[in-house]
Length: 258
Length: 260
Ligand SMILES: Nc1ncnc2c1ncn2[C@@H]1O[C@H](COP(=O)(O)OP(=O)(O)OP(=O)(O)O)[C@@H](O)[C@H]1O
Ligand SMILES: [Mg+2]
View (tube, each protein chain N blue to C red):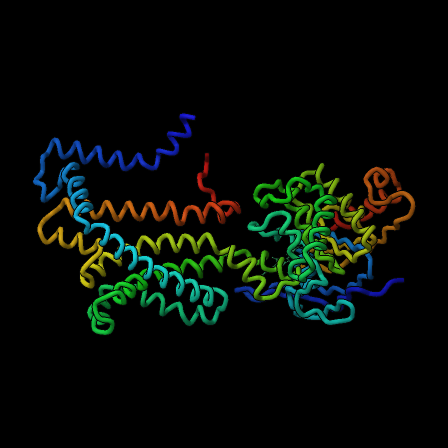
């Protein structure tokens, strides 16, 4: 049993608006263990992004607290990397320099920096596009840059907010497999938001389902990762256990249709 | 090949249209030269002024004043714009002042400023600053406010601090507006410069035009106007456009030729 990495307790959040406070989430309690991949599905507007941004340190919870490694989260930090729903890669940096940015900030020596960037460029299938600017890339490639940039900085925890939402189905399959491989080999703690039930089951060690706004976590399903049913689509689709879990999640999500 | 050539010459086309209209009008109406001079008259005047040696000196002193005033205006506008753009309370404090003083043209200050600064370089610099500063300031503040917040968040999640986000997000993100401010600032700087030279100088293109108007020499006035416009165009093409090509255009923040 590994240590608790992220502990969310008694979290509730309200946004202030002109017409009074808007409740974004119901009460959420959540523990993510070290090295675990936790995926989250839920209807649009239920508060998924709010929860992720609070864990990242961009939103101060109205109620409750969030701890990372036992320390209270007060601000963003390089221990918690984020891939934003809007993809926050910088248009004025080339692919290479976007991916290297976190390492530059951490003042990693150039040689080592180049090595890491080179490795991620290869891993993410961006070879040949190193010196292009984001506007010269396809949507799917931009998302890969966003993932690579966060991964390169080597945070303990990676928070991802629907990173593959805007790519076509073909590219998505590849990206999901790549991400699955990354998760398995690096043993990072990952929190991954998605709209896709299949994606949630495919990537997660544990799948969380949220209710509609103000969202709470209504179910947690463990995804056993033994033998078959690993993180490649061939074995995943052929595995009846995986299909059963997907169906179960699908039922839970359907009940929350807005 | 021919298409490319046409495209490259296209910016010159409006000038040709105007010249043609001028020529046709002048041949038909034959107005007195003190109202509208003919094209050959203006060309002859230009050549005379150039050979007489006065023209080069006028251009040099005007350019000196312009660049000095614009440099001070851009620098202060950028600094103040960044401070206001990055710090809400300061923006709230400065905004009414900016709106207030922006409405008051340099000419209003002129009698006072002549008393304070005398007639000379400082006067021209002040008048140019008075227009350039506000344009650059307001564009810079707007540019900073329009940088998507998520880009800054992205850098902070990579471990970047305040300085790093300013350097790698705010500055390049606001650049399209900053450059647009500098471009308008240069244009309005010319206007202020000529006004300043009418009263507060003995040399410069403003004085050249002023002397033309004293002797009812429309050819000198029109030649001066053509020269100012031409210099402004050259500066835009050789100074600002290359910077844009290498930055905001290269980054895909603005399209040079939409729909091509
Ligand atoms: N800055 C804000 N100010 C006011 N209300 C907000 C703000 N951000 C989000 N909300 C509201 O909070 C609720 C939860 O938003 P959130 O972005 O967390 O949803 P989400 O689950 O990520 O949705 P989606 O799947 O569409 O991305 C929404 O109803 C939204 O309108
Ligand atoms: Mg969201």
